[in-house]
Length: 333
Ligand code: MG
Image (cartoon, rainbow, N blue to C red):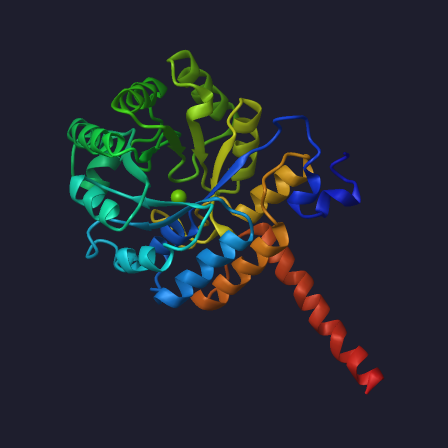
């Protein structure tokens, strides 16, 4: 299909006739990574509306909440209550972020079977983010991952600042590779490479992935968590796809800003990813229109404009439809 053909703008699920195996998994982070970076704390009811909307749109892996200390992230203090409300949802993996053994315990108590750990590739970011050295963090995570795996829980381990650190600048690729190897050795199922402040470029993405694979980290166990801080998220995602990565993180409507740059975009927008892959004939399983509807509802709930490109395009088509309607109504009245 030509990228410029009319089919290109159809929902992603209409473009499922790619080569066999030509599919990607979109991992939704809006309820956790998105909301924790929003000033407004959403009530439980709005979070459930968001998550059910994402489920309805076809997302099967959703990072629903965080089990860090509630006083650290008041936006997500209702983690246990939220998970209770989601207990009846079938066919979806709900993931919870866990910082340490206590967080894992709370996640397991809440019924989570999928957890995500996090630490940074760069020393300064790790110290500022979790107040520990990388060495200390890795020791803690080894225990957390080991305990989770003993319990049969699936573990995704984020590595932040892989493509650049807001304090140190360029981060040696070998540091990220060594860390990924250690996390895999500890039992992590998936390594999510984070571009914390959107410093990646497509060539760097390909170099990092090649180094990971050369270092014994299978590309099938890598995910990319790209940020659109300076508008490069989709280019970097495409580079990752071409290098063999098949799991990409996104947040609906691009919710969640960049903590280091007030006003800038944060996470890659899920609709933008679904649209890009749909246009390329790569199956995502996501209903683009339903995802956009969910993003629009979220923007209303948050009371602010959200940055996703497809989100804004979709809202624009709605405004157009609304402005056309009164004229027709007047004629028929
Ligand atoms: Mg993020």
